[in-house]
Length: 424
Image 1 (tube, rainbow, N blue to C red):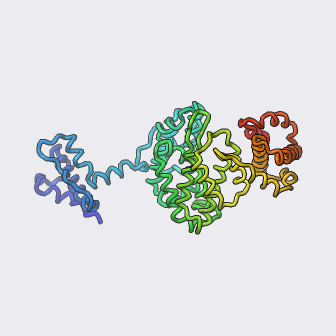
Image 2 (tube, rainbow, N blue to C red):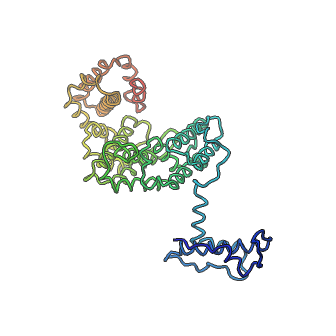
Image 3 (cartoon, helix red, strand yellow):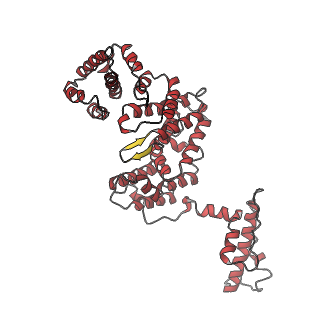
């Protein structure tokens, strides 16, 4: 409990003249009164916020001959100073800037700083929400991309929008229970900003917190509450940001594989269905990038790729594993793909009723298998896979693509991208 500050009468006693009317005070008296009140206030704060046991305030007071700057630096680590700085730097207490909350939806033509001004104004007035924060981050990112896709992370870092949102989440107490992560729009936007600003450890701490209570997380999505989907979306957002730009047109997946390994080590898959679902979600996303979109990425390191395969084997996704074998960086094999297709003779009849994404995956598997068989000269299997490919073309009314595709089978440039456009 804070000690009561002495009353004005007690402060006056001893240094103010005995007058009947306590005010007004002259300049000297006012200064002495202010100093006395300040001293009393600091004394009380020192009692409420004492030095920690591991703190060594050897320079708590400035000695004779100490300059003003040095004196201030010596006392800047006092618990009371830290406490006051925390209060004064709290975004909820910040003075509104030159913006009105009525302009939460700003135009992309406005300067980027104007969007942040709107954010800070809404925060200081208690009107900021996760939905509005997501809208402001989306506007900033889309405007940055419209200006130029180059050096996007550096330009995001210069704005500091991620840190601004993070400070608001902490000051408002929303980071304590991580409920804000159930707003997936904000989650997907905030993680890239935090990575751009070098604050990726914050996102990993969120994942670790969710992982620590993964056995309690419900599989069903509940508004305003972390669920299995929350864990999955956060995990993949982090993994996606760990992909490494190798050239303007090439992104290595090695960093994403490494991030998946680390995330997998945090999650109790043996005891938590939510943790298993999260790993499965991210692994499947990376599997697609490693196969259907393989031409957009350089070959991964063998060790990372094989560790990735090992994580996925218990998930029992035979289509993904068969397709990944065709894209091994050093020893691609076709046997798993051919076996998968032979065990599913009805695949031609079923493919027209499949979802577009599944159709694309099957067709890419067939194309990659046909290409690999052709390269290795497997005369026994190659004709059967070619007939299967033609039957799928006919079933999906893709016969008009045959000439173009036939000439492209020997090329790593893909076919896959064109098919994605047609099928979607």
